[in-house]
Length: 309
Picture 1 (cartoon, rainbow, N blue to C red):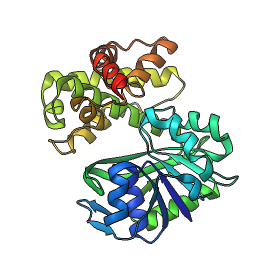
Picture 2: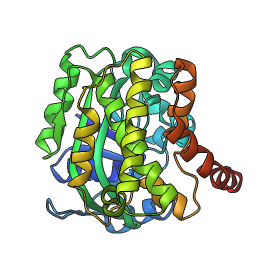
Picture 3: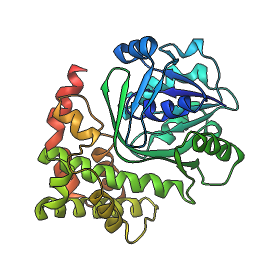
Picture 4: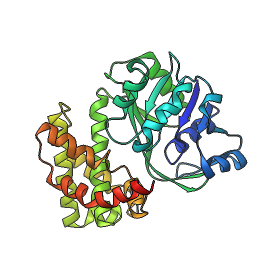
């Protein structure tokens, strides 16, 4: 099976690297110093699950030269998706499966509208990682997992074939009965922890342990569960308790990607995370006061970063 990794940073670089290390046919779509480093020195993964160095890496910034592949893993930032869709068109043929691993809950719809519903899956990933330096991906927390399925959650041969390839590379795979609920479950986790962490500028250990910030986390999660219900997505009754328990097992010094981007003054995924909760909440008639506050607090800096981008 031929894989193309559209967006080879902290997420795409990690999962693509595991596939390549296991001998899969992988092409990394990247750019800038990260691309240069992979071409010159290969791709290095640092992880508690075991380090890996892929000496011979196929990497390019030009998908036209790659041609049609079997599976495209899309791992760009949410605000880069429109541009990425145009770039990836040469990779996508009639039987190509496009699997989004982005944050948020709208990427699959956006891909399907542009590339065709029959080509696009729905999914998410769980991994806490970052580019330590060009050509080096460091995994610092969470069991690296890919959760995905057909957009209507029906079983399919292509989903099982992709799952087999991923598992062969040592990647944990989950094929849920309800992929929409799985995507919203991640949204609940990422938006609450990332948003409260970004506003407080505190790491996970502080946010989850202080009664005041833990209360904000819980209320944010409850709001997101309410928005999901308003959209017809039923999350488990104990989802908030489960999410808080999961956060309790993360490295105390950990930061989310939203926190890192905002702290560094870079453009972030605020609109696709907290912004989506606020927007969809209004459409569904569900109040989201905690997320409204987080969004309003972070928006001025986000607009400034967008203007510089």
